[in-house]
Length: 319
Image (cartoon, rainbow, N blue to C red; front, side, top):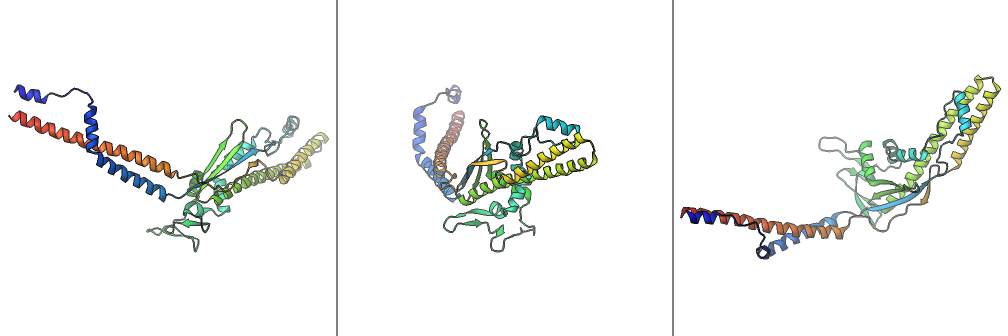
């Protein structure tokens, strides 16, 4: 009985380095095999992933920030006349930045430049022929039609899907020190990435200019209507000054191509891919394979040791 109790006593919690190295040495071929398989899988994964290219442009807000700037005296006179012109305290650059990333603007941008298929139906870019590689299970590039699924439902993406995917490709970073913005777009095609950045800058400038011109024309119509309703000379003078201000705003907006954002560093087609980092993927896969192999060896040794101790305890207790 004492012998059984003695054999069932637990060893102290100490790490035997010799035993560890012996276990690793015994399972060296298993570790090598698992590491090799993981490295092979990592290399295959890295090679199968298509190249991605990122094009960037740096833009700076225009000095007047777009829109109209109304002096305090003229704004006060407008308030006395019952006219709310607004725009004096509006940060047009902040508005333009939010509009640039808004769902309505991006959806209109995608449809205007016919980017539905390049965004949603491409799997890569053929550098030799400079053409897209399409997912023919979703889109037919020959006819330009979206296919249907097994239930007969069209696979054509909605505006929600288009904007969601495009936002994943678009990055807008603002420099807090000088207020400059960096617009970046990632795509399979370096030429497409560069073109899309340029189109975004042009379209946001045109959108903000059109919006401000429309607002100024609406205010001018209102001011002209008020001018015809009053016979007070002082009030008429105020209206004339306000109309002159709106006319000047429209003239400057139409004469300024880069209305809100001025391009400092235009986007160019990148010659080097931004991802994937194939060497890093292979190294990480190899390292994970090595750790997985070591874990399997130790786990297997632990299971065997547990089974062996259980058998020994049973035999000793029987004796």
